[in-house]
Image 1: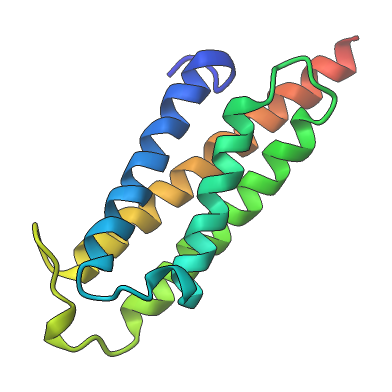
Image 2: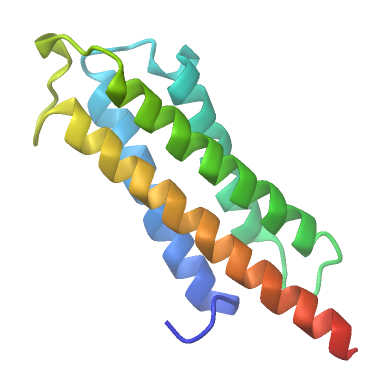
Length: 132
């Protein structure tokens, strides 16, 4: 992708959000309490932060803060997901389309990707401010 700003960033973060929501939905079939679990809550926070970045206009002074928050929460979500995978998961946590571990790791990778995209966009934002 050429740069991480504008609609390219929005499309990429939309894909990250889709992966997270699909993962939580699939996992919720066997764990209805997913939103109140540690990793579920952290993933929902990251999704909300990515959505805020998408909703924040490029010329909004809060743009850099929203990117910073999304990057931090994306990395936190990835770490929480990986930590959950490392913990013992009984077989009843299998989900349609694969084992829960695979889905959670896919979601962790998406959260890392979202965090990296936000960090790149933040760097571009900082460069733009330096030029102004």
